[in-house]
Image (cartoon, rainbow, N blue to C red; front, side, top):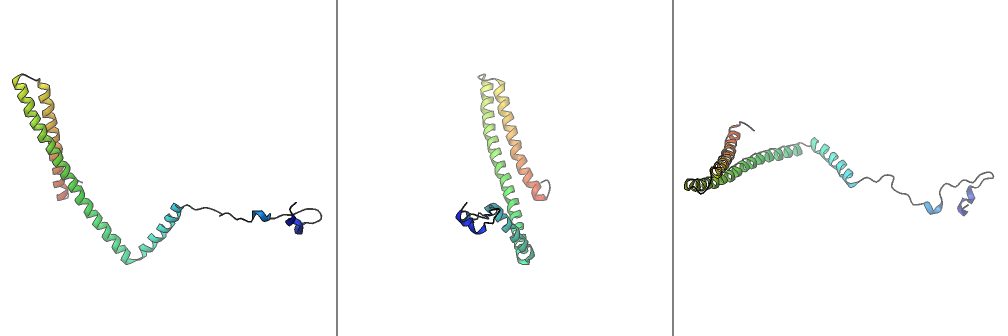
Length: 142
């Protein structure tokens, strides 16, 4: 029996609550940093919802982001349209070259057909990309 338990000794039993070496108290629960950030963010968002200025600022940011997103999507469609039309132009040149080989009897019809299918497919991708840009500008398909 530890010496510090002496004051708690009774005649029939010994009662030791905590040994002096075990005075260190650990945290009851360790909350992760992510959870703390979540709580802080939730409280901050509740406070922002109450502020007219913050609501106005968040509406402005949302409207700006929406407009920027639409412009970036339009730019994306136009750039991909140019890339596809460029590839179709290269395919057209290759089609002409393959046809010249076919006409001279140095190649079969298969190369001409493949080159024409490539050209038509990529031309369609390019044209349809610009067509979608035009439709989005009119408020059509999204």
